[in-house]
Amino acid sequence: MADFRKQQYAFAAHLRNPGVNGMPEGVEDRRMKIYRDLFFNNIQSLLAGTFPVLHRVLGQRRWAVLVRDFYHRHVSHTPLFTEVPREFLGWLAEEFGNDGSWPDFIQELAHYEWAELDVSIDPREIESGNFDADGNLMDGVPVLSPVARSLAYRYPVHRIGPDFQPDAPGETPTFLVVHRKRNDEVGFTEINGVTARLLELLRQNDTASGRELLERVAREIGHPQPEVVVTGGREILDNLKEQDIILGARR
Image (cartoon, rainbow, N blue to C red):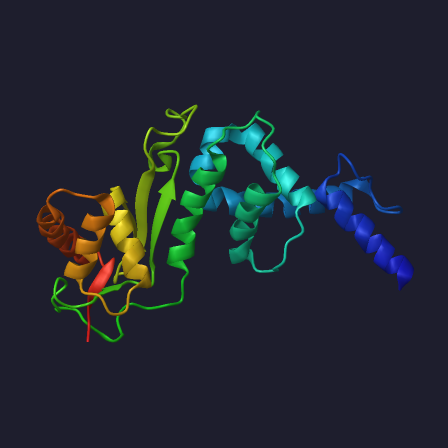
């Protein structure tokens, strides 16, 4: 069994990076090539499907180098294919170590693309709950959808592509919401800082009304006319409700 285990480790090490680790003894290269291509291409195609923009931005050669480094160095903690993109994202954030030869925005771009998968496979439903879909969002307590995520980035990740690759972060943060609607369609909405703060408060809120939350935002930003923030906030709440980001008012 010890010899067999040693053979397995050698087999796996070669598959992870054949340029560094030689083939296990007694195995024909023609047969190993089948496994080398099959394993790596499965991982590469899975990640390319989750991160299509990053794939196009880097190009096939650099993309393959990035995936190979992940495939070779990262120790995954789950056997589930649906969790491999999350592992890749964690590797980018904690282990990759950009040496300056890669775009600075790749981690944020990858997170933005992964958020779509995360929301789409979230098992929680939005059809049921302790809320009134027609409830008053100003006087009642607005209920945020469990399958909505408020995101903030240094780079305008929603605009990045082969024809737009910024060299530096934007002058102001980029705020986005990724959300799954009742028809299971996933959408992204760009928002401003006020709306982002409102969503953050809604995520933590169980008792305050929409009006009270808007008044708090007005105080935080020091607006000279708080009623302007409250009036504009009513429209914001209604707009979020139309997109299934807010589900209604708590019963």
